Image (cartoon, rainbow, N blue to C red; front, top):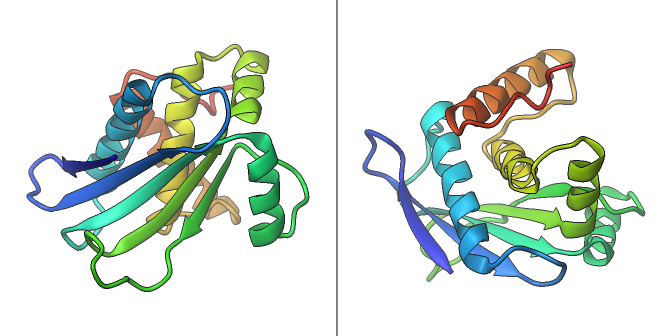
Length: 168
């Protein structure tokens, strides 16, 4: 499903394509709602310079598929909670310039939420924000980059009424 969003005060749109491939996920309507809120809040706070008609795809899958993708794209033979895969050059006939894919793994995310005593929806929202920020060019490999990215994540989640995931 594709959802057009507008950042506050901005007429540009971004389409969010959602696919549930595998795993135990909430209903598609709930996932769409979480994704819309996360992407819209990220656009509003991060203020990226995007072309109108940009799009992002979010794949909800399980740990088995995530492990294969993580091995293929990052050389790590294990599941992870979220992967951000930047898009190839735009394809004729698409809604707009594709930004890339955010891939989420159900079992890992559920386990993390349980272990950290987090609401599943809050943790999932955080990971969508995190993955989307990667597609917008943010990273956390260097300490200075991590401070900027984590600060953005904290502010975006605060805007959504979600506690700081990096608080001690």
